[in-house]
Length: 263
Ligand code: PEP
Ligand code: MN
Image 1 (cartoon, rainbow, N blue to C red):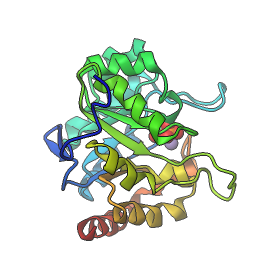
Image 2 (cartoon, protein in one colour):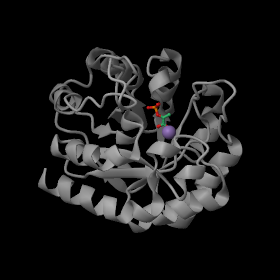
Image 3 (cartoon, rainbow, N blue to C red):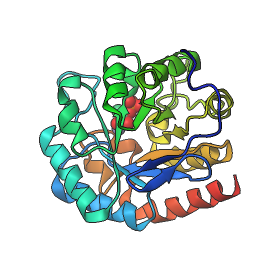
């Protein structure tokens, strides 16, 4: 059985009591990395109050340099559990190594597979068996065909709860970090019934572009947005230049909600 995703009505998933997909627009927000209790819980309360649907935060971080900070690991997961307990928001966090799966399953309502692991087929198969919703990010240079085939590794094991995520691809352009491929949104939605989420933060790499790209994503029919937010981005351990300022998040969320409502 192949091509399990390329037919059917738009999928709606129930994630931690919240619906994602179909007519339900998801706003997934939170810091790039879980850095401290204050930073994590503060951001969680801010985005929850502004109506975010799910909370994101990395405990295990894929970093380009092996010498960079790689996340708080188990301690980060513990802080995410605290954020969930305090705000009620379901948690999205990245898994990089199948050896951490059990620990991540303790807190994650959605397991994120980062762009760099999109074609880690053994990891995808494990997630298919784990049965938890997966946010599968498009590889830096992956075609949509490759993204869809990667999702099939999860679906094939019986886990149908896959959210596809466009997060920008490598092109010749250097003025911003990656090129957000918004054409992928309607095309993926024609080809599959899976929800399609857009990540404007990692695509742009620049805070000033995050709101316009978010509004555009809503306009082309994205099922949600995953966006980075930090109380003090200048002091963020990673991705500071692209993280939205927490104090400005409510205004941003309102604009996005309006754009999603008219789309
Ligand atoms: C992230 O969302 O934390 C991340 C590292 O993104 P990507 O895998 O798309 O680079
Ligand atoms: Mn990041």
